[in-house]
Length: 255
Image: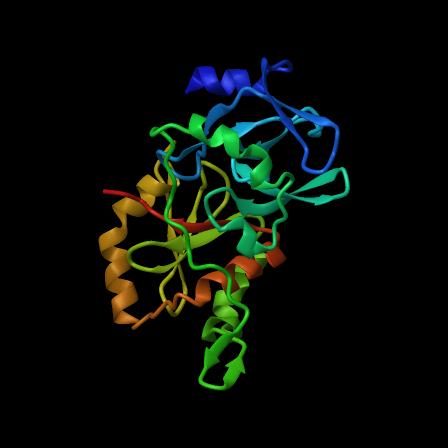
């Protein structure tokens, strides 16, 4: 893996593939696909490549979406305004990009011949439900507004930028979690009534700290009768980006 990442940061990449742009005479020179890891999710890897016309330090996934590695080494999706790409707060693996309103840099048809290069070692994380703007009940269509959006204790997390820069939802027990950086000083877990604080040990990864506290967290969530609905996920993902936080999707501490 380290070899792949070193190649990822290299200024020159070997050009291996030639693929024409649809409806155009120009050619897209696609650099050698590279297998990279996503540090936010243990064990997640995926391929990226760099067409000749991509801005510096930007790459494209095999489904055509622009991605960029931020200062923390985390891969995030980007949005485009003409030739200009801007990083979003959507972490690769946290959302279905098309459902989050992210527009592909290239159409999948242009890169379909490269999919055979994506080997069995590529792994993905569980995806949350696609963002749904409305819920339909019979003939009535209504916007889903979770109770926690009215809870001042919950919404206070949006002002804690000194100690939070990312937020997601723990897999089991199902509840929101938030922290800052790869080695945070504190991890916040929503218990249904307040944000419980976990203090990671020195150089302890967030997922390991959460795994340590799963028993206590489960007891608190059950005691407070916290229910997290599938429809809450897309609402929180949009709220996270409004706060300026990275959206992590479903967080899996593992065993």
